[in-house]
Amino acid sequence: MAEDLLGGLLGGEPEGGEEEAPESRIAAEAFAAALAADHAKYDPGVARAAERFLDKQARLLDAQTAEIEEQRPLRLRHLENQSREAKLRRAGQRIRLAMQVFVGLALTVLGLGVLMMLQDAFNSRSVVVEAFKSPSALAGRGLTGDVVAENVLDALQKMQEATRIADKGMTTRGAWDSDVRIEVPETGVSIGEINRLLHERFGHDLHIGGELVQTATGDLALTVRGDGVPAATFTGEGGDLQKLTQRAAEYVYGRSQPSHFAAYLNNQGRLDDEAAFLAEAFPRAETDADRALLANIWGISYSGLSKEKLDLASSKFRLSMSFSKPRTPLWWRAWGNLVGSMSASQGEEAGWRESRAMLAAAAAAPASEQPDLLYVANTAQLTWDLPRLLAANLKDATLNGGAGTQMALDGPQIADVYALMHDPVRSARYIATSDPADPITKAEILLLQGYASLDRGDPASAVAPLEAFYREWLANNSVQYTYNDQPCFTALAYGLVGRLPEAEAIFKKIGPWSRCDAFHGDVLAHAGDVAGAERAWAEGTRAAPDLAPTPLHRGLFELGRGDLAAAEADTSLAAAKAPHWADPWKAWGDVLAREGRWKEALAKYDEALKYAPAWVELHQARDVAARHAG
Image (cartoon, rainbow, N blue to C red; front, side):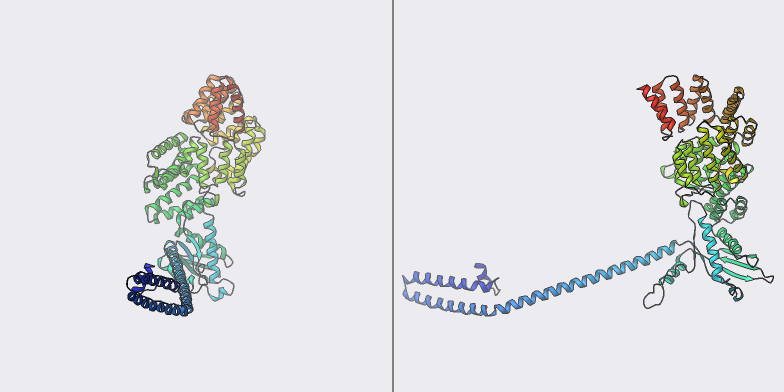
């Protein structure tokens, strides 16, 4: 009540004033009665005066209460109006806020769209084929400028799709590809036109155009030109438009993206064309990075041409390294290729020494500058590190739609490694998904059939597929490039079925590969010429003292004839030379098992399983050793 009285005195309106008037009146009357009673005892005049004063106050309070009651409906309506107005104001504020948010989002989306278009323009590296010019006489025959441009574009896109290379090049598109039919308000300009203008202003596109004319002799002459692509004219018979556009497209591809065109020629097996093109393209390279890339591809081209070109291949790989910064990806790539070419030209031991130098450099490099798995495939192959070789091929196979970047398809090579790791299930899976028309796939299918027959101890069944493989190998440079020493499997099958002259002819032709020397000894030992076998194995050891196949096969022969001490010495030596190859570990375990040293045999089998986890015979041998060792 004190707060209400103070409020009234200060001119404010107490909360709930219309409800408090009766209570005020009751309080005033009680106060008057008490005062009158108190003072009447002493002064009746004062009491009467007080009574009259309080009576007036009571009447005043009655009047105020009546007035409040009369105004109450009006106040309620006023409050309701104020509430509606407040709700309307809040609704209006929400609408304005929503509009502001909508406009903000719209501007953000528009800004992002513009930024994306700008980014796309700045990063654009496309070959844009414009419509060609064509006279009306040819247009009447359907040889319009658009038709010529579409043929050139189709040829470029097909070559690009058929190119297997690690780095991405320029994309190809028609000049009309980005003509999206969304109009910009009040301008009549399409989004596609704006996009095209941004590409022209900020992009790095290569625009190609030209004209098609008919010569006086009735032939067709197609001229192409573009940014940085000098004009060139190709002439052909009147009905040879497709051939003309193919030649024109190859010219454009070669001048605009020389490394990719060289890789395309390599992938197509056109190695002579590739070498000739690179001899012309290399002097035109403008940067050391371009020179390094072209020199590396040049070396690959020479590697596939013939054995006589292998030294040239090595020189090109060294040239590539000289133009590359040390410990960059291209430097490692060229070095890895050098390991492979030296193995083929100077012998596996030379390649092994080069691989040791490369691996030492890799170990000394900072983690961020070490070579990718892709570039250590040749070193892994030399040291029979089959798991690492498999990992390198599997990683490469993630590029270019699973085909990889190598001259040969990755699928057949992966299948081959799985077969050597005694995993026929995964080997079959990868060969089944490889291009059946590719010559490497065809050759690998024959090899796998031969491997399986030899593993079963059935050399007679191995002869037919391995003979067919050898014929493919003789006829195809790409097959020879991919399979250095695999023809020696054919020689092994010949020798095991008694066809020694044919076996000897292949061993002589293929030359000093460690696996071939190992097989040669096997063939001679099978024929009863133990002295000749020992000479073959000794020659293999002399030519490649740091490689494992020769001591492994000699150890297996010694195990077969019961010379366990010599067998243990050779199989343990092979395991030391190729610590990530399962075969020497299993052979060593077999020797120890023959001697009854089951716990030691079990340890060797467990080590072998790390590198050939799907090898059925290895699991069987381990189970036997575990039972005896337990």
